[in-house]
Length: 187
Image (cartoon, rainbow, N blue to C red; front, side, top):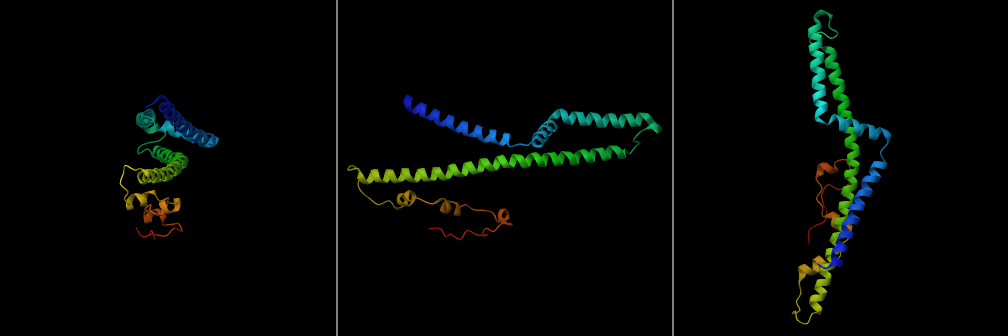
């Protein structure tokens, strides 16, 4: 590999890294203060220290109320503790759903980029096959022959035609206007 090829490859990789960085930066900048708070809280609750803290608080609550005997704020079977744990579980579930919703937006953006890159790659591969076939036909050292498979692969395809061959499970399209089955028959 020549130094020029290496620098072009590094430049290509650097451009890809920069594009990914821009995607994440735009996603972070679009976050509202409430989104940031939810992510910080979810991040804090997702650490092992949070589990240890909750276990410690529950154990201290139970021990303190058992030790207080008849003067306990929350006597056995600890109905206030049950209410607090249920409320905490609900709050944690809502926090997780809110942060997951935001993470799904970033994942959707990544999927769109991946699809776009796949479609571009399909077009580029088609062009390379077309150029190779043209080279083969024009080369005096290679006997001329017809390669139906290469001709088919080099034929440009529209993005709609490519996407029509993507199988979509019926469960994923249940509430949309898309047809349930792919109407295109294989060639």
